[in-house]
Length: 308
Image 1 (cartoon, rainbow, N blue to C red):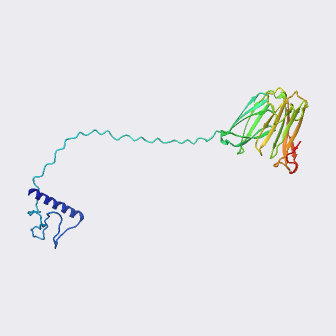
Image 2: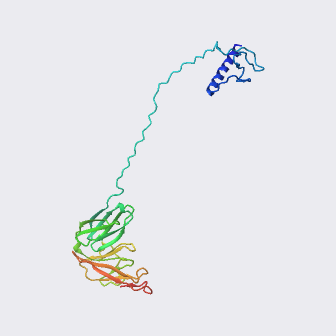
Image 3: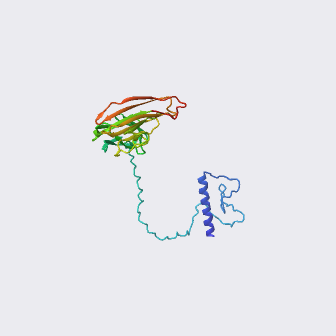
């Protein structure tokens, strides 16, 4: 019986709290209201409890109700607290410092004297990697292509004892250098330079040689600079519309030489005037360039011929 009373009182308390939380107050209710199992509700001052059919009859005083013989809470064993080790340190993200250094180094041209009165040219222009440049030395001029690192190297025949070389970059800037070249007085040289859709070529015949003979020197049969047989030819420039040059060098003691100039007539050059220049360097004397204009025949049957 004591357990049943405690259950009823606790149900009343829980229901009262629920009603208070929802903000509903119930007064002067005309009908029976069920709020839970075995709950008594007073009408006005009537203290007679209403009992749900089938429930055990028990007088449950609501006002001043008291719960007795409450079971003690179980004693839980004490647990030793683990000392606070502190939260692990969160690594701070290191700031990334972005450098704004120049993407490429300035262009640099280095010259050095080489055998056979030649100039070794070393051009480094990383800002212009893969682009076209123009190399100039006196009347010698030609278009060259920089590699993927912006480098170009070449061997030029010197046309002056104090040789100056200039590289013209695509943006119009120039970089140049000079170097002293010994032994120039031992060579005679002739330079053919031109630019345009057509080609010109030097043919040199040494000691009375015929076309195609052993002494016929050209861009197709150039010899090497260290040849003991006589002179040699160096050709520069391979771009279709770029500047090109051919330079023939021979020992200054050679006198039996015959030179010819020829120009093939092609579909891109027929009916045009080819412009260029010729320049001689005799030992240490450099002559001024001589302008050269070569008129090619009109297109038609002349295509495939050679003007000499």
